[in-house]
Length: 69
Image (tube, helix red, strand yellow):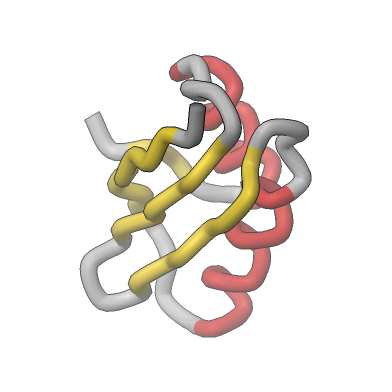
């Protein structure tokens, strides 16, 4: 069962930011696709199972950014 969820990330300002978030989120075991929209801060994640808030928050934090509330 594949799921898709969009998260809002704060602090991204450039292509390097997009790359960092994409790399960290893509490294999560169930993730199959990541699309980052710099202008809005949206990160759309497709995964084989739903991700927990802690899983996605940790990956975003590792990239140097934060999930928006």
